[in-house]
Length: 332
Ligand code: DP6
Image (cartoon, rainbow, N blue to C red):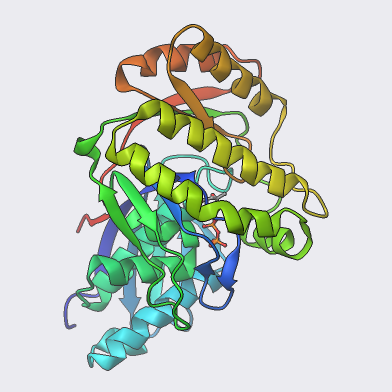
């Protein structure tokens, strides 16, 4: 077959320092606000895509179990559309997709980010397409907004865009990981699936929180300030702003009806422990997504001390140290 029917890709998870919550256009999955993230070396997804003659429907296998393929089929349909315009045979074929994460799935560790970024790279590769990073980012965005950022390593910024067709809602690299090597300690407080997924949660926030408009109105200020903190390599500013933006997001979640309470007791204890580290002179700052895990931003030389402090927090099950990660890439 033209270009090879199988491809394997690896993409790393990311955590947002300035967060995405809310959609501009639900069908195109364009975000209502821009976002800035760091890609994590220690957490990744490997995905194999094989366009297969005779297959009646797309199949998705996650860690060896067959799961519904609806959301990935949407991304595969876009790949098949591109393939059709190039006259490639994948245009007419369904695919078998197998995917494994090296971390717990669906527990606020951004498995959809690494998963859809790996899918975008593997599916376009298996179809025989050569897409630019920007096109890969847009393709990944259709699966999950945060996935658009996992196409890139180091620091990435997602643009909300204004175009009606979503063509300017993509991420790009702000700075590569060698440009400012930071560390992130991921404190895991729960291994189970989270209760409300981000897509549903953000739609409920938009529909019901009195803080939603303020969230939209203040996003650009945070993005501008975070860009300058990264440009100036100002860690205290980056950290303080990350905590502020995270808590602003959680205020929005808490004032959604019904309330989105993603924290557990260990999440809150870990936040206090991070403040305790700062009181002892260790520059460390937390951020939390739509789940109970706490990610602590720190300098590489402090990562072991931060990890030790996190595993002492009651309810923290494990704490993993991660460097900043690379861009998504083909493995085969
Ligand atoms: C809190 O990217 O999972 O992690 O586009 O609906 O799939 P969908 O949402 P998703 O939302 C991520 C929300 C967040 C913040 C962030 O990563 O920016």
